[in-house]
Every structure is written in C-alpha cells, then in structure tokens.
Image 1 (cartoon, rainbow, N blue to C red):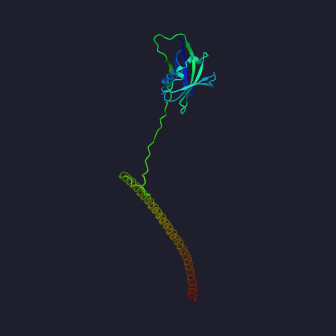
Image 2 (image 1 turned 180 degrees about the vertical axis):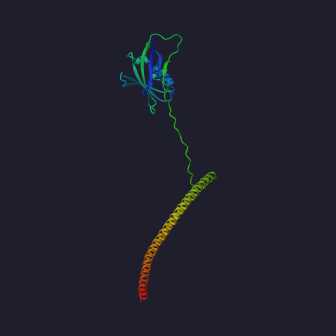
Length: 254
C-alpha cells in the first residue's frame, strides 16, 4: 500500500503549511477532515475541491462537502484524480470567508511505516490564522428615553452629582482666571500711573529750569546796566573834583 504525502499551504500565507500523509485508499472526505483539523478550523461550513494546473489555475470542480454532508466525496478516492507526480488541487472553504488552500503531492512512499496510523501530520510550519475574527464592541452610554410626551426622562441622581461636581470645578477655574486677569490689570494700571508721575516730574523740572535760566539772564542785564551808571556817576564826581581843583588853585595864586 503506497503513502501519498501532500503539502497543504494557505494561499495568502506561503510560510504556513502542513505536510500530511494519506494512504492510497483515503478519500477526499478524509482529506477534508484532516486538513481542517491540521489548521485548527471547524467543519461547519461547505468546502469545495478543484483540480489545478502547474500554474495554480483553478480547473474543474471535484465536488463539495461539509461536516454534515460528506456522502459524495466519501466515495471518491484520492488516487482517482492523480495523474501527475506533482498533482495539484485547490480547496475553497467557507463561501463567506473564502479560505483558499493549495494542495500538492510532494512525495509517494512505497509502503507505510510500521505501526503508524494514517492519515497523519508528518510536519508543519507556521501558526495558521484565526478562523473567526473577533469583533471588538465598545460600549456606549445610552441616551435617556423619551417619556412619551416629547420630554426625556430624568437622569439618575448619580449623573446629576457628577454634572454638579464638573460644574463646580469649571466655576472654580473661571474664578481663578478672573482673579489672574484682575491682578494683571492692576499691575498695568500701577505701571501706567508711575509713567504719568515720572512724566509730570520731568515737566516740572523742565519748567523750573526754564524759569531759572530766564531769571539769570535778567539779573545779568541789570548788573551790567547798573555798573555803567556807577561809572557815569563816578565820572561826574571827577569832573566836579577837577573844577574844585581849578578853582582852588586860582585862589591860592592870588
């Protein structure tokens, strides 16, 4: 009795494969069940086998079967569709998910090993994908239902307390922001007053300086004028002295 070794590969995952040994008496129903067991899939869905050429182009259908309906292919031996040393098949499982497998005969062994039960998984590589993808459901808070009069029912007390707490926190933050703005305005007002005081002080100093300069110029002019008058008066005295001298001299001569 010959042993047929098939390599089964996920069409979309070349690095994931299973090498399974079958006897010449095994059927496509045996291949169906052993293949799904090897990759960890259940047999609840319908699968279909096809012939394939060397370029993995899908050919004629061999038949369909499922976990509950295997009558047809349970009577079709594998060797009935093998006419090439590297015979190729394709297998499509679950019409919704459309899992695709390639199946290739890679070796023919003349006789079975002693005390080995066939079919058997000879070797395997890679972790197969999960058959059913999990859908993550994110819970959402339901809106309160209307009471039939166009108004919504009252929220639970717990929600009211939470809203009140959030409102209080928001109010505290608002008060802090207002206080900070008032402080900034007070600082700006004080700086503005200081600038105005400095400006008034500078104006007063400038005014005093101007008055001082004016006063100084007037005083200088008066001193100069007075000094000239004194000189004139002094000059008049001199003339009188000269007249006195002349008169005195005349009397003395006589």
